[in-house]
Length: 258
Image (cartoon, rainbow, N blue to C red; front, side, top):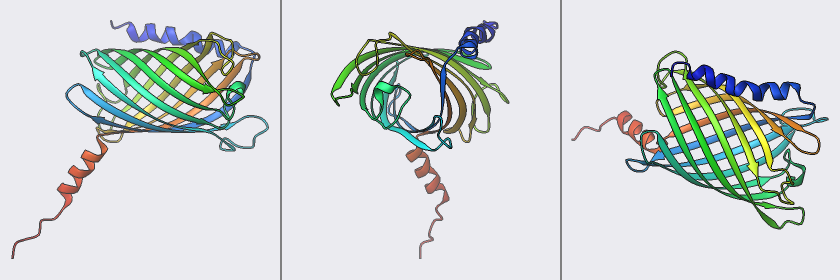
């Protein structure tokens, strides 16, 4: 198992080389996500996410020149075993301008189910995730069309200045994800939808608050192959309300009795 991180590196490397040698058009985007998670029971947790996306494509002047989309979503997670987690989610996407010409200025309602398998070792964590999405995407006539999409992701997370992630720890991560979909007028006839390669760094501000800065290279096989460079800044909060109540109760000064 000691050779597993090296094997994962060689698994992710071809995806990066593919982009370096392909002839394609390109665009640059910036995305920011706020993620709020809460423990609901012994094996249950909930999560709410809010995402904003800006994009730059020639001849735009700057990275924040064009507001691309916003989305809000919720997830419920259940740990069926120490290494297995299943999840159900629902999201709404308001798309103003995106990389897919067929989806420009269209909205989407998405329902998702996924299973995640974790390999946790001292010094790194590897996860394999399978997600099935039922996408309801508006077409050019503003009618919703149903599209099924399968996403397969492999990811590694490595703490840098410690053996596990906790307050004050910096960590690095990388992942590659393949997307496959059913053909439709709203999303095109391709079955292979895209490939997303990510690499970045994170910092645990506290045990329950993290910030991540990472780069994503997204390859879309369309009539002219599209490669999007996406810079991401994400913030994650766990049990935010409970932690604020706890901190507030600790900082209150007791009033002496008369």
